[in-house]
Length: 101
Image (cartoon, rainbow, N blue to C red; front, top):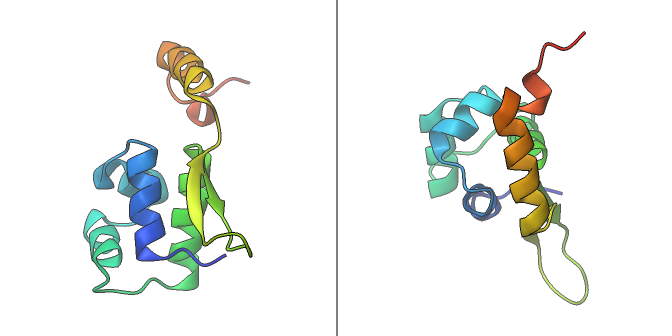
């Protein structure tokens, strides 16, 4: 599934993250993400894949186009699950960044 500027923006808003957070998590510059979302620049395959995987890691599900409707985004977890996860992660940082051996 191709990540469009509109999907990227919608996913970021749905996940409640700003461009600077998405930039830090994905390794892309904030300016590059802004240009992509505004439709003034295209991303290469590697950059688009980085954004896509980062958004998915942040709990966003990208929905493909189907006969019944177009593409879209939704959250991976319910509101209750998200609050519980945020509480757990707030205790020791993001799960994927822990240095537990």
